Structure formats: structure tokens, C-alpha cells
Amino acid sequence: MNEITVLFFATMRDHTGERKILLDVPENTPVSGLKTLLAERYPHATGALDATLVSINRDYAFDEDIIPAGAEVAMFPHVSGG
Amino acid sequence: MPEFPTIFSITEDELNLDELLAQITLTSTGAACFFTGMVRGATQRDGLPPETEYLEYEAYTPMAEAKMGQVADEIRQRWPTVEGIAIVQRIGRLYPQTPTVLIACTAAHRDTGVFEAARYGIDRLKEIVPVWKKEIGPDGGTWIEGGYTPQPGE
Image (cartoon, rainbow over the protein chains, first blue to last red):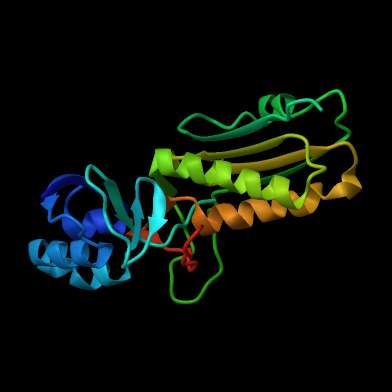
């Protein structure tokens, strides 16, 4: 298993009720696999998890990307700065 | 060639436009283009209350600053004549008429792309820099979401 950090921002924080969690995931888990694990943990956030943007180590990441050991993953809605 | 100044930051402090201009002005600079956005207190739109009491901004600061640096790099690739670049986003609770964001570009002359570069900078910030705002009005709070989905490599 690999330990990773998952951060939630804005609506994703509201949906999960968490800012930051530590999670053990199997080696070679892709982003899509992490979303599945999180949907089991936060069943009411399933729809939000389908639509979330994801970053790995502060770069945008996509469903097929593999999450490395020790990664900082973040989940958040479409950005709205300015 | 001198090292051109590039400033990018997320801050909770008031934006000091004069100080930021000074930081991106070189002896060779003859033009600066500033874009600054502010909280709009009254908005004409259908179906929503027109009054905004304040906006609550939050950022994923380390990634936001990295993406601001990427926006600055993209500006330099497109407009090599740009000298200084400042990209600053203020976060926290911000009330109407308060500047929230600044994109400024300097160059030797006004006709070498500074207007377009500043415009590009604010457009890209709104696409890829992870900052969010929640609008608080008389009827509570609503998260505002953008419409751009970053692609691989962004």
C-alpha cells in the first residue's frame, strides 16, 4: 500500500466534510480508482467526485494517471479566481 | 539582457498597486498595462439576488502560485517584448469595491503587446489557477464555479 494525502477545496470540502485526509491506496492506483475508493467513503459525494478536477503533486491529473507513493492529491471544482 | 522581474503570489494583504508597479518597472520600461478586478456589489442577472455582501476567496496556495508562474511563462513565450510581470490574487473575505486580483505587464513601448499580455494573463488565471470564491448575499452563500476544464499539460 502507498500512503497519500488527499486535500479537498471549496465544494469538494463541503461534500466530504474534510479538508485533508491521509489514505492508504494500493500501488499503481489511478485517479479513477481513488475516486471509486472515495465514493465508498463518502457515498453522498459520488456525483461531485465524478465531476471533480484533480491534481497530483500540484499539477492537473486525469482519470488514467497513476498516483505515486507519498503523493499530495487535491480535489476541487472548476476554478473561479479573479 | 537584464533579468526581467516576475512576481506571482497569493496574499491576504491589501493589494498595493503602486508598489507592484515599482517592482516591475525597469529603466528601459516605458509602458505598463494593469488589469485589476474588484468585488461587484450589485449584479444585474436573472433569478438571483442582486446584492453581494462580500466574497470569500480561498486558494490551494502552493499549486496556485505554481500555476501563476506557468501563466507568466506563457506570457513571455507569446510576447517576448514584455519586461516585468506581476500576477497577484488576494484571498479571504473581500467586500465590494475592493481590488481582488492584479495582472500587470510592462514593456519598453505600449504597442508591443502589453495590453494583450495582461488580458491573456487574467483569462488564463481564471482557467487554471486553483482559486475559488463563495458569494455571500442576503440569502446565504453560493460557490461560484468556472467553466474551463484543464487539459493534460496545463
